[in-house]
Image (cartoon, rainbow, N blue to C red; front, side):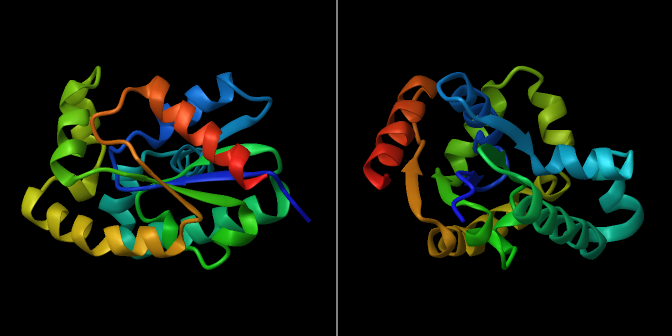
Length: 173
């Protein structure tokens, strides 16, 4: 069954949520964010989940969310947390689009964002830049492996990113 879902993956801070909201405006689809779903389910912020229960607990919440998405969601653009790509049922949920950028490009994007300080604080795994870069280098290859489409977002404005995604989606239909 074709669920007509689009899953946006990529490293934290690459702009998955922003791109999802822009895509919704150019389609008849809905949009949800896996981190928002988890925060709602737990009634607490991601950074507090990491702090009190650890990363393994959080990854289990992502797995629970992925199963719910597979069984319950259609016609939706799903923006994900940076590690959500590890879910084994990703392809069952929908078409996977990897938003690709360099590590420096992501840091620049975060710095330019409104509420930049809050955006950095909100990401537990970005607190140590050296460790974050190591994580980025590991995940980059894995994102490419699990994606159906790769969109390079480096130095592109939102309008052009959306235009490129919509063009690729038309090619795939």
